[in-house]
Image (cartoon, rainbow, N blue to C red):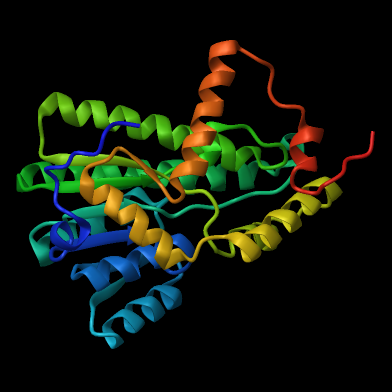
Length: 297
């Protein structure tokens, strides 16, 4: 990981004012980020396809003395995302922080995944990030003031995991997209920071939501998601506490943003070793056994 840029101000100084837009902020990690950024002093636009959830979070923030507004948007709809960007820049003049967070999970064997669900996961997790970049970056460049784009990948981008291939593939893609964006912003020397956010386990309902939206009959997939949900409830980080840690790293100017530095850096190192040595993917039975899931021969 790069050495933190010590000349960059802390979160309370850097994000004590201005406008932040967080997609998928109606629940989970996005909600935690929205609440923390508002507590720091930003006006937070809670953007979510679930308008009721967005309204709830925004109302809670304002009720607690913060500044927030809700915006109903489907990040897979490019014209809708562009309309949101146009409206927000017209209202606020600038957006200092865009967090492309909206995302979906999926359980099941790859060849059993419904093609419609595959396209949905990719459309939200990958296209949604692209749409945010496509609509906000040109306006940030035109504004000419310092801004930040933070894209939600995952530690899943450092590994491969059976029975959640669509999610894993999408998060590898988001990391690659974010690295490319970082390089391209550097080419034009715009005052825009680009960060890749790779959380570990943060309390959310993403695993249950996946099986509600796209149920699978595969017993291994269901057992894995049961185990992951249980582990998330038992040991997952509180979303606001995780947001505090990650936003501090963003404020320092870091590219790599982790929720748990030791665990995430360890997974990155393991990935690096795997690629250096060109070893085969991990035995899935060993991998699942670590989750407490036994697979019969």
